[in-house]
Length: 577
Image (cartoon, rainbow, N blue to C red; front, side, top):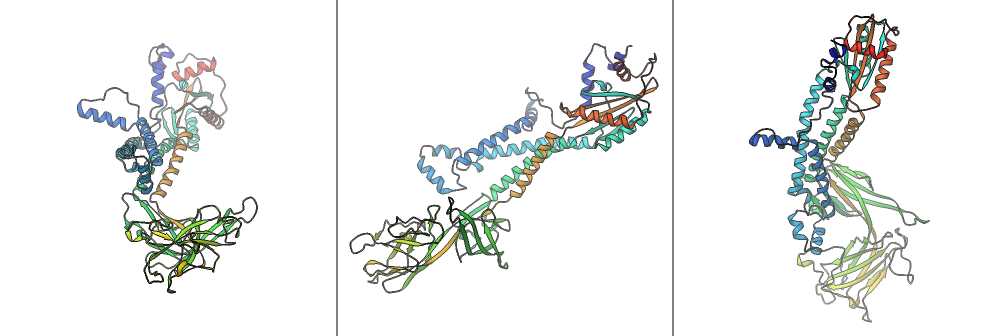
């Protein structure tokens, strides 16, 4: 029998032996399941169909499709107003699109994230990832507990291969190879006349970590959407807020949120400070906003002082308090015809431009009586400017956001404010549909511009209005987003896992040492999960180091007729060639 026949165990012209040998060497380099053929389900009846459906659902191909569908499904949630976010916007959209509204309602496009179809995609993706991860995890654990596979018969046919002769005993060469590979982080197993080593398990660990991180992010997303809460509140300087539903100006929450989930805390706005650019092309640009508050945690917590800045929220028991905006609140007092003060308060004005030209409304809905003793309601629409250009120098538009020359213009009305109807009203807008505007002696609409400390007398002895001073207000957003920390952890883990699966190469190294014609022939080969130029480089470095640690290279021996190991004989023939 020829040397070639003894090596392959088959006819010399049969190349199949090589394929089987390499396949055995590369077995279990990955925990990824083999792709199922798209044929009919294996088995008969319901069980066969169930098995086929499960295999398809847990395949990576279907998981990627579901992830893509989930991304597409989230697009309508960002384009179409959602009931869970803003009911007023949804109502406006329906009013402006009466034809599309029935279609959108049937498709649940106003409640995308709680819709049946979005939930189905979400749950299927969740099941797909779990069904993919669990068997791969067990298989990976089995690989960690197992040993590197033995060396193939024909090492020279592997992608990376080298060999040399040495005068060192084969056992010493194998011992040195085992120590060297262990130092390089390989798992080593010696069997027979060869040493098998394997490295790069973190690649599969990274792959599994990436998939687990996806599940963590899906759980965090669901948790955050179901239990989140967010509300806004305008607080006057000197005023306070307690974390209860009735205190919010607007509030939205997840479907499983309850009022009992609101953590108990309160705070008071002690002072608000804002600074602006004084000169140059950026004059009036905001430089710094600070809200100085006193807060307490729990129902009986000790008061603590702190400051809240833009992008620097105050965090209390999992809730974050953000500073969103600010403005001015002129302090206005109203005296009726009998000389009784029926209203005195700071009235928030809403900014209309970058220089804080602001508009608002003063509503006196109780306690006012005219000169005849008749009960009536008063209303004033106002425009406030922190820096007035001066009389005769233009309209009421602010020249600078700071309080350099504050002025207030009021237009008065009397009649019914409409608040007794029980319908909600915008507190910053005056409804004049049931009111009559005050007129001056010439029959023109009565409007007066005042500076701080000045007063205006209403026509026909109806009373007086005084501009007492100027306060400030700030708007805060109180958000409670459970699962955000879990989502961040999942995102970081996903990046790390993806980096590991992309940049770490799973590879195996085999070293065989045999005696041939009085010298030792060392054969070293490597196999990676994928083609890479790094594997031959690493193999060459290992071979150079191992060769230097062993005895000097032995001279080429004289040819002998004695029969040798087939792999050694093949290596020797290649060397002589």
